[in-house]
Length: 245
Image: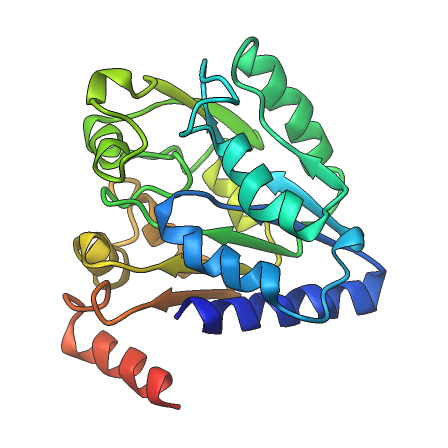
């Protein structure tokens, strides 16, 4: 799954660079993106010097030295391995609102060619926990993380307890994510099966934030058999047919 998603992402980046001389991307983090980013950084033919990267979300008040810092994650797993020179990391340590506004202005200056995203165990998209704000036009917003989201961070090993997880984060807004010309959503693992089912088979609703991806004209959802296990027979049949081809 991750290799297939990386091949897709590589083609998108190469096409954007061929058309416009550069590509602008949004990168997600978290345990679900480990294998995808590893495959993408090894993909041949991408001129990373022509790629500009934006950050999807970051905790408020967390040091870049903390193992759970998404800035550290991106530096270690994407920026340093590829040599990306133009990148915009969200610094939520001191003045999170100012960082959100500054990076938001830079992001809104031109189209984003592709956003790499995932789906949280509670159906969140970036750190837009339910009920998500589907209306705001601000590129980045300060959000309060719900209990399920914070438990997920503990479950993935980023923190020792829920009390250690920051209460707030800077998150790219839902509408800003949807402004990306293309979205590649990578969702492995049985832990995500319930959220995937709600997003694909349920109603598009702020109570299931990632369900909004169904309204985007150019979104591809990459699942493994575990994350797809609870889909309806109709949805599952379509995915298995696509997988076999």
